[in-house]
Image (cartoon, rainbow, N blue to C red; front, top):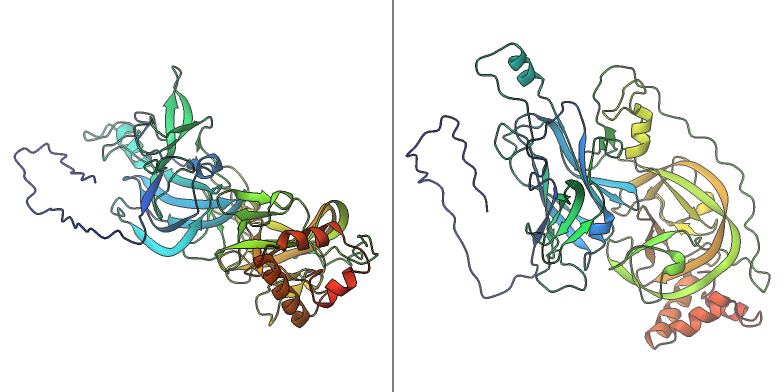
Length: 493
């Protein structure tokens, strides 16, 4: 706990007899033990260095730190911190290099905004990245000093004092963020700037405290940049991404018109019996595996718990296809995070605070993602009564993001990819590339047949036959057996 008092007049003999701390004790442990992850520059490592006006100062907590977490965390609260001259602050979360959400953002910062902000819980997975960005304006202080004002302040610097500046985000999570494979008391609660070596090299501290001794990982990367990742944020409680700007002016162009969906070539026939077996994902697609973060399809193991569409982790119990050597033509669906159904494009004439144009800023912050999947794979679509085959998805449709929010389709195309992988989860869904929810079913088998076949496969897995069934289906079984398996919906589902 810290209590700060501002005493600019240097008064003495002043006693605070109105503040108190009430401590509660219990012998019954709570269901969840919470903790914090403090990002930015909590130790004011930059103390004494000049703060420039109009620069997007960004501190990154990299995936190299969060990947050391023992398990996924739930973020339920955060607290941004700066002093008098900050214009705006925001904390962004990225997954697999793609913008996921703004955890908290203050568009018009005030020094009185020193409070925690609770919000709908958000999941932090091992391997995610966190960034805090702040921009400051010391022009009035500089003008007063240039004019020789008697009460003019010295140049603005980073530091602990109220006239100085800070940039921190205190992120509250549960369970307590423990480091995988480490003692119970090894908690990662600091992911920020540290200095190391005689030359004062800036590194990232991934620490269980402020001592940077036991349980500390010093990562050879500078967490501070003046640009961030497009300097953009989304409204903290949902909505399309927008761009922080340092210049005003310019008229917004009309929303971009997406090209018409091309005529897709038929998916090539693969497999030993002449059947179309390519209702799968390419090897390069990823899923989020509990304790391992983003994992390519060709590295997922049967039994892994992967992130499903309902936000839980669901076990992979069956592979109905797993062929590393196969090549196939896939549908590619480009989507953007979309809060209201419109493709958002900031004014092209507006220049981002990092020097990029509005369009470049939008591309960097809009969460654009391209899903690569076989034509017959079924995808949840907002407004559709049942999942839709990927080949039937059109520009303007909205796929489902990992939080349930719509992701608007802006382009449909095709591409050749290597590897054919089709995992099945107990939940029946999985999040691909941390961006889009997909089912584990295809249009090749009627829903009723698929339900019966997969129920039988789950029963087989429950008694230890999942590996045998996966080997038979994934490796290609004799033509005489495959039609029988298809009849109960176990193949291509």
